[in-house]
Image 1 (tube, helix red, strand yellow):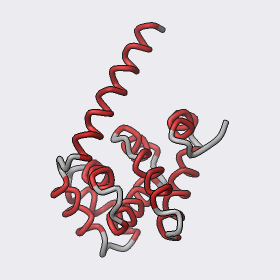
Image 2: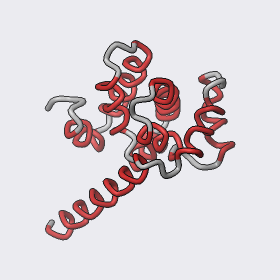
Image 3: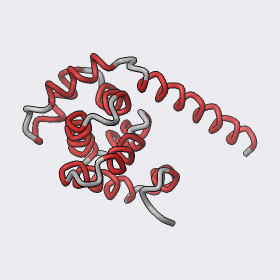
Image 4: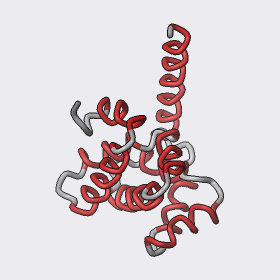
Length: 146
C-alpha cells in the first residue's frame, strides 16, 4: 500500500504540472481550434468530430483549463465533454485521465448564472458519479458529498 500511495502522489504531481502548463497557454491554439470545429456540430456528431481530429479529448480540456474565465470556451467544452462521456465508460475514463473533471467543476463555480454551463456540468457530474472509480475525485473537487 505504501508503493501505491507513492504512485498516487507522483500521479497527482504530474497532473498538477500538466494543469499548470495548460493554464499558461500550452496547447491553447489546438484547444481553441478544436472547440471552433466542434461548436457548429450537432450533438450526435461530436464524437465524429473528436475522432476526426484524432487527438482525443485533450484539446478540449486544455482549452477549458487555459481559459477558465472565457464563457464560450467553457460552454463549448462542457458540451463536448458531456456528449463524449455520455454513453461510454471508456470515453468517461479518458475524460478522467486528462483531468477533465476539474475544469467542469471550475466552470460551475465561475459561471453560476449560466444555465447552459450548469446543465452540461451537472450532467457530466451525475454521469460520472454513477461510477465508483470517479466518486473520490468528484468529492475532492467539491462536486458531491459522501
